[in-house]
Image 1 (tube, rainbow, N blue to C red):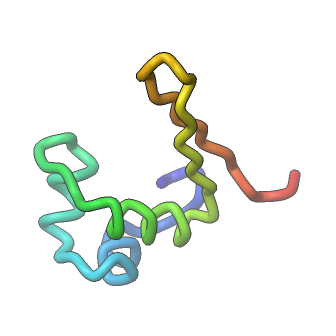
Image 2: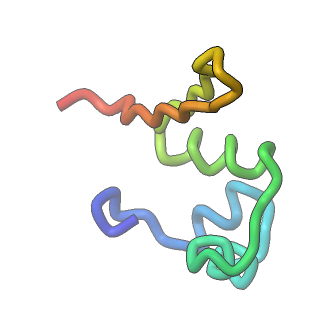
Length: 68
């Protein structure tokens, strides 16, 4: 979040959760639903793709959509 200069409160507000909930999520103490995680990724301009390898394994791909 420092890299993107994003405040935890702004991210929490966008995702519709409290700052305490966002803090617990970022610290790995709680999980959030997929809808909230998608909102967080949208706010941070990151694309999430979950692909199945065909062997019952999921491969998660995170892609930064910012142009460099």
